[in-house]
Image 1: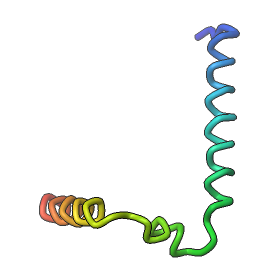
Image 2 (image 1 turned 135 degrees about the vertical axis):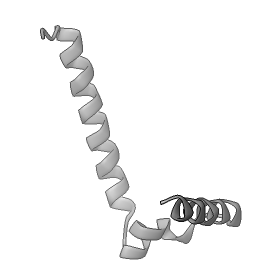
Image 3 (image 1 turned 120 degrees about the vertical axis):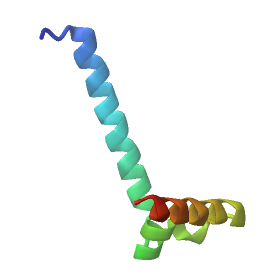
Length: 61
């Protein structure tokens, strides 16, 4: 398998971008509540959909 310079460039740009995004997001987390529950910033629609999907998944397993 031969990697061309453009392949290597794409992989490096992706890795740097993901790392930068991770560092940016890590600075916004102040407590474990922010990490596990998104700082409780979800609206009721998102929260209810999450609960429904978790319940459906539990039934299928």
